[in-house]
Structure formats: C-alpha cells, structure tokens
Image (tube, rainbow, N blue to C red; front, side, top):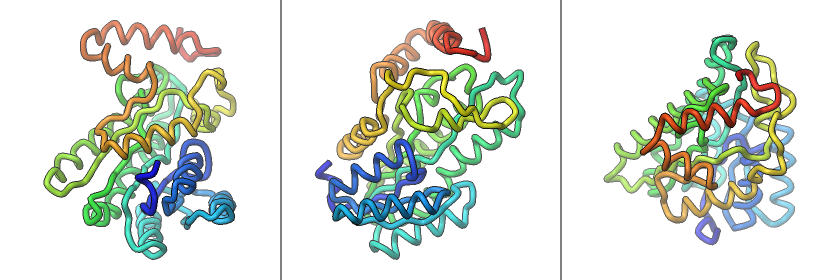
Length: 271
C-alpha cells in the first residue's frame, strides 16, 4: 500500500462495493483519489468522509456509458491534482438469466457499462497514464476467464474488456504503461443485488451466501498489491487460480464444473 502514497488514482463505480473500499483504503494509504459514479450524493458523502480523516479526494458524477461524462471525470482529476497515475475501471453491472430467455437489451446494457465504460475512461486517461508511466486496471471477473452459465452478457462483456486491455498493453510496450486485468471471484458487494434478470429488471436479492465470499476490502488490497508488482493478470482466490489452470488442460471438465456449481444456486435459471 505504501506505493500508493501521493499517487493520483481514479476509481469508477466508487460509490459502493469494491470501488468504495478502494477509495477508502487507498486514501488511507496516502493516495489522492478521484471518485466517479452515477450517484453524486453518495460520492459527495464519501469524499467528505475521506477528507475528514485527512485524506485527499475529489469526485465527479459520471455514467460511464456517456463518453463526455467520462472525459469530464478525467479532466476533474487533472484539474484537482495535476496528473493521473492509476485508472481503475471498476464500474460494472451483472446479470442472471440464460440466453434462451434473456431480452437482448440486457446484453446491450452489460456491454455498454462493462466494456464501453472501460473504453470511454481509458481513451481520455491514456495520455496522462503514458506520461506518468502509470497503471490502467480493469476489474474483470473469473467470468472473464471462462464462460459462466446464466451470465452470458456478463461473461461476454468481461471477455471484451480483457481483449481491449491486452491490446492496449501491447500497443504501449515501449511507453512504460502498466495494464492489469484483475479477476475477483464472487464478492460480497451490491453488484449482485442490482444484477439484471431476463426482462431487464433488477434481481433485488442474491442467490449466494455472502459470508462465504471475498470482502470488497480484500479485493482492494489484492488489487493494490497487483499494481505494486505491475502484474498482467491478478487472480485472487483459489477458485480464480484453479479456473485459469484447469482451462489450460481440461476445458471440457471446467465446463461441467461450472454448470454443476451454477445449477446448485437457489432458483437457478437452468438445471
């Protein structure tokens, strides 16, 4: 965490869950955090709480689907602190429905937020990250390592994010830019409560037991460690590392394991 001291860190999706945990943890470590999310009220309260503890923070209300609002977030960071060292593209939504049943508008919404939100913010932050030889981080998922049944749009959007970030990394090999794809497993955050179901409405409740999941604070610390080590891929718990390993040698077995695990969920959309 010491490596974050005095770094200017932009975090999208910062009003709750993993993003909020990152904002608090990184500010406590001495980073200058710039927070983006749709809820200006929540951002204002979080910024005030950080500053009240002696931290440095600024915020800009942003819907990452809107390119101009993403540009405004980047400009806010430069205006407030003069530079950008780290951009963490964390804003995202999930879904829970099989492809047979889902309205295609749900998949479009997932791509807009999870993929295009990353692209929009990265586009305007890139010159500043190149200048600082900083870090571009995408918060992906184990669902971006292997297809997750019942989450078609989510997996697709995270795969797209990974392909985009890996290409940006290659294009910047001689410019010193660090690009990391971070893949938490199931995390105890509100992203599952707001997950979209087949008709595009919010799920409202989670089918999984929160107490057995990673906490947002754990994810925040692991991401910070990955940034310090300038990792390419940040897998967080045994499920993620096992998925990455088994996929290389027995992908068909992994298909069956994923099906079995997801079919065990209460009210699973498939059996």
